[in-house]
Image (cartoon, rainbow, N blue to C red; front, side, top):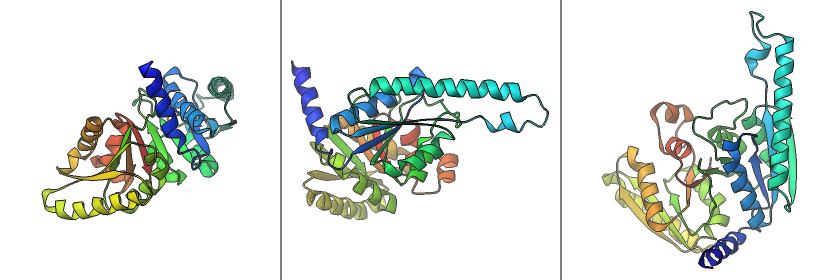
Length: 292
């Protein structure tokens, strides 16, 4: 009984965002270990009363059509095309099952997944990504959430590999005074308005704590004007501790959502040296909403 009541409250909470989020876009793959993404997207769309738009996208690897030694002949390419067609059909079957009872739309294309998703995101309010093992890196079949974030121009909700239900009891806003964070805050307003507790948190050096306090206080006041109750927090820690500190705070308040600007530095720099976006993308412990 208690569990049922809690689930009902969570559903009612997310429903408050329904007027702002009318279309949820998700990349659908046939593999079982990619299902947490589809499960999360369908659950969110159902609770919002939104349209769920599923996209299956795969493409023949470039080496299949450009092999200079002739090992990959026409027959091999034909077989690969059959496999892709079968995968797209299986993905559609999975999507149809999850979208039962929902307003739904389906698209299947032979294209690079990230590019296809970015292009189709023109009609989406929220893009759901992630929700698959971290070692899944075939860009001809898998949609890179980081690339999608950079190209879509829409908020991207990354599902942790283990999946789960977005409850929105509480949320943490990862603040840094950048364009990307301001964009993420604006995109997250519909979801933040559903949470019972919101913490706006900046992790910085000891020397920057005073300025950081000014930043987060201003954000808290701005959220209050949207009837979102939030509190500010500043933590002094080295750069390699930022994502850890965000997750520690999220754990402490029971937050299952972190809101973050994505790739404030160049993506190449984060790929080589690491960074907050890299850590949150590659090691997500909970849902993360990114904007760029």
